Amino acid sequence: MSKARICVALLAILLSINTALADTSIFVATDRHAKYETESPPPPDDRGKAPSKKRPVYDSDGNLIWHNHLTEVLALVADDAVFPEIVLLGGDNVGDGSDKSIDANGYPIGAPYFSMTAVDAQVKHVFGDAVQTLYTYGSHDIHATEPYEAAFFSGPVAANGYYIYGVTFAQMIFDTDQQAAGYEGKDIVDQNGVSAQTASRRFLSWVNGLEDHHPIIVMSHVPLHANRGDNAGAWTWTKALNAASESHDIIFLWGHNHTVEMRGGDRDVELAHYLKIPGEAMTVQSWDAAEVGKPARKHGDNLITQTETLQFIYMNAGYITNGVGTVFTFSDENGNGRWDHLSAKRYALEPDDSKPWVYEIRE
Image (tube, rainbow, N blue to C red; front, side, top):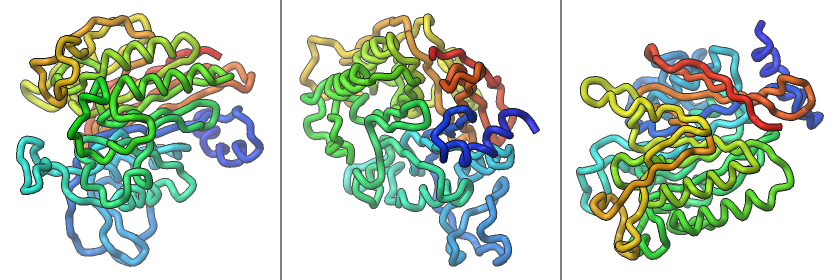
């Protein structure tokens, strides 16, 4: 058995004595756009087992919960003897349909009513109740049946020697609170604000108040790079993330526009944005100062771009619609009790062209 798998097997025991000597893993993905399906339940002796590929998920009473790529990808991870400490999903937890088709209430048909409790049940069906689950709010999640604060997270969460920080949909698509006037998404009530300027200031204030140098995983539903023109706060966040990188290793994860995912034909675009590391440049979305105060949502004509050199890792978290997720593993290679390496491994239902990689992080 490999060192990594031995460490994962010992994780629960070692965490109980508050040591960071064992590798710790986190599964990340975003945007699954799942479909509701109805099927006959499996034989009783199949219930309660981790789902194999293409197997639907049922509750303890045999009722269908879901059948989609999320459970299939999670099963791949479990089949690899990896049981992450945290499962982090970056928004669009459900949705089936075109964003351009509007229902009678003015919402995209791609945002049906659904339960985040059912999403959580899928994860725990595979990894058990001990796994911590964190869900950021995405553009398809407006019809989640639970209250926003009960279903989604934003801001900082302390993990095992590292932090996770959530950025909501509104906190990236609006640069200022004024631009969010009239916005009706669930994240309008978020305690960290409804725009990039408000939320990024709180992020930097939190970072500057930390007494350690633990790495920080930032999960945002919406990316920073310029593509659709629907992320007016990207430049504001890029500047804040670069500033935070002076004292911490930052890993920024995203989904939403899927520009890096292999999708066939003329949609195989912008593969260079799959992974960028500190020191590489990227064109990020910005906001035309002359247009501040006007609505920014998907009004690309009012947006401009800025080229910035990144001081942080920039990576797509995975795209569950295509059956792709990622496991990050923090390791202590020199045995001094602090994380010094970060590895990423893609899990995909179909052959995937991405390679595992390891990044050295500051101690």
